[in-house]
Amino acid sequence: MAERRQYTRIGISIPVKYKTASSRIWSETFTLNISAGGVLMATTDELKIGDELKMQILLPAEKKTIEATGKVVWKKPTGELSEFDAKNIDVKSFAGIEFAKFTRIEEDNTIRIMEFVYEHLHNTQSKKKK
Image (cartoon, rainbow, N blue to C red):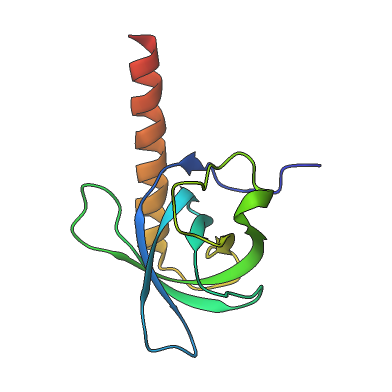
């Protein structure tokens, strides 16, 4: 299957707050990976494909959260993604959230995420060379 992702993605756990349009309550979770195009996050909620989420993402070493609207584009039970060990975490599923193409995210926030991803990749590569 051909890779459809437009942006470089890194595996990292970052705190995320989100809520659906029909909810007043913010849920807290974490990412499993992130790119300027979206996030993969763990969830205990019963999100559905197509749900629109208001999101707040706090990148490491930043003080200001990234505000974005995302759309659930896929969802799988934790047992169906063998590359992520969910034994020690209280989650029911993983959800792929897209916020670059079809939903709203400010351009400067997209740039902040891209810079974070590339800086993280650069630091990881530098450590491997030592």
